[in-house]
Image (tube, rainbow, N blue to C red; front, side):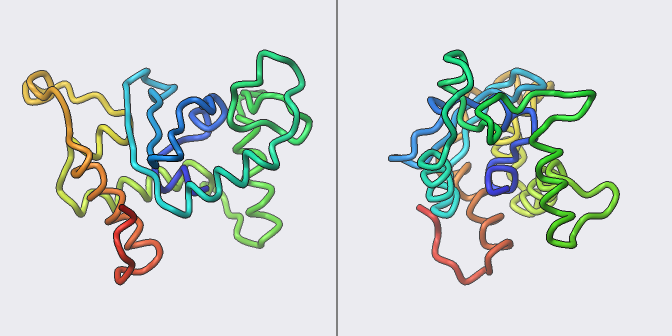
Length: 173
């Protein structure tokens, strides 16, 4: 859940992201969006880093050697891949929503990506938001833009974190 709201990861991204995409010592994730193959980079919140470390400690043994590099696996050590038009990670999230009494139609893990974009838009830094979300900028500005600074990316995720946890939090960096 934290990667979905912190870094705007969708279920397909979570299912495919390799452990190597995370630099937890410096607090960054760099991984192209699965749907578009557009490069993206995002600073991680302290809460996200701790959750990822905990996930790695409790990660099941991969069912086959080809899955050794994946960050997220099912309880049986298999990939969180598409099954009958659903991604198993979405199915697992929906089950948790139902268990907690929060489920309703059209509410799922992908909703957190929408929330990220909605809240991040308040920063008015659309190039930084696009970099985090893996959106391609087809404009002339997008063609000319070579990079987006880490400070700008940090300002976007700090804004979303402040909205989520309370605006009087200290910055995550």
